[in-house]
Image 1 (cartoon, rainbow, N blue to C red):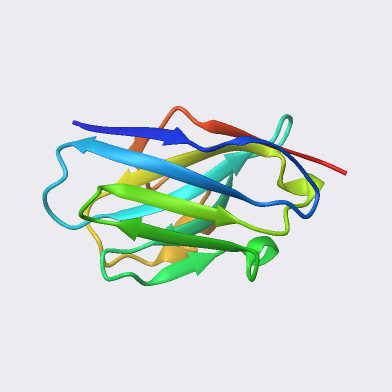
Image 2 (image 1 turned 90 degrees about the vertical axis):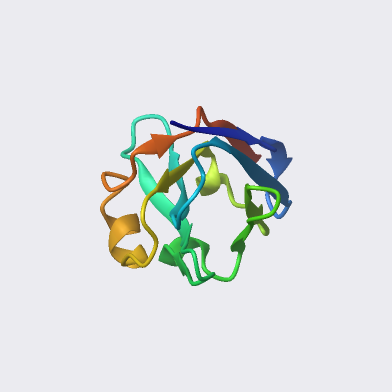
Length: 129
């Protein structure tokens, strides 16, 4: 079993920054890919960013140049740096993990999370104008 716990959400003004973290525990051997998704009230879940076992990344167009995904395998932690935040970024943010690595990250983001088996409980990001 895999457990994911997110933290780092909060309320910021437009233009502000946050760093989200997702700590991984449990069965963590083998290679895996991880991602961040978000869901705003009344909207479908959206893929934000993904990272593979070799460090390759993918982003949805709306966050390119503003968000950065990274992972520290020694600390078993996934990060998402959110910069130049906009009110449209307001949502619950979830981290997700699936085995194995070496996947099509862009496709997995566009599918909205159906490829991912393990999920965290979410952390809220609220951006005011």
